[in-house]
Length: 198
Image 1: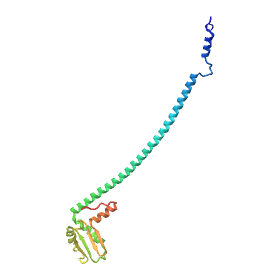
Image 2 (image 1 turned 180 degrees about the vertical axis):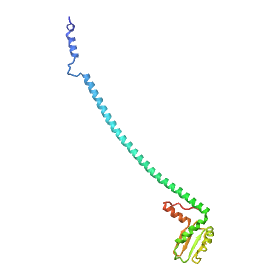
Image 3 (image 1 turned 90 degrees about the horizontal axis):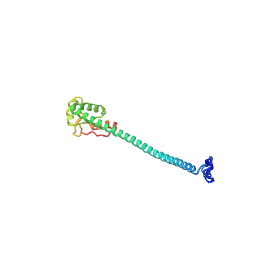
Image 4 (image 1 turned 90 degrees about the vertical axis):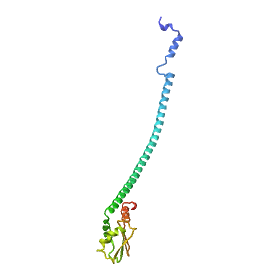
């Protein structure tokens, strides 16, 4: 007898029941497919949310970097200006020391200053006073006594005048060739207000 004949009708029915038609999906397969679809949808939703959050974070980070770059650029500009001011101040300090050293080593340089000031003085000035530091006056007097018209220009010693400069007072106005005044002219051209300090 064949194996198929030995089975009861009930057993045959069970076997038939277990073997589903090829075109229909079983409930377990439907559940697995639905689960796979849900997983895929959740993954896509999470990806979209993560991408959006990442873009927002990236834009914020980009904004912070832009602010940092602008701040850095501004700081460098300020540093350039401060450095330029510091270099100018140092150069002026060195120049002041060189001038003071030159005047101390060669006090006769006052003659050049006085001659230049006298050339700038108006020829029409009838009477003028040449104010000099007493130490400079001692150097200038022997040289100018021979060439000056004593009725027109008088040498006056004034301790307020810094060595190395002079002041000519006339009826038309004063010609300030003092060292602090000449220094002020130089530093103003350079955009500074550093005063001459004796």
